[in-house]
Image 1 (cartoon, rainbow, N blue to C red):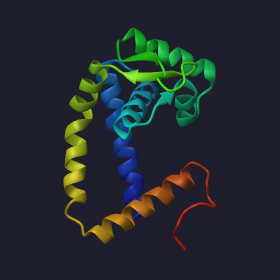
Image 2: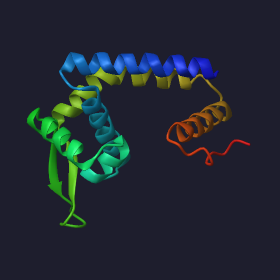
Image 3: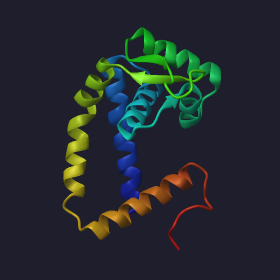
Image 4: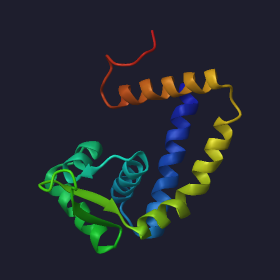
Length: 146
């Protein structure tokens, strides 16, 4: 299972690198765009600092990345409606279109595959992947598995 997960991770990385090249973005810029789209899908507000943390980037590197995405018309910044001092990042309609065009079919196919499993199996896979992600992020003490 671990070897299959590694192979999946490499294949996914290759696919996202090809997508980034196809649309003329650096792979890190594409990661940022996906993070932004995920935050919007989940109803989370994302700031430049939150994006920097999610990507493990410095503030100056994140500022440069955001400028590149803004120049491409893929994101905008807006004042928070809850706290006018905060500036939130918002994906543009063009970003949403790029996301669906390049990832929509893949997400749909993977969701279809997941739908073939019993709910308890899906929960076990989610638990494993969550714990594995924690390990990759350096949180070796976390996790729910015994």
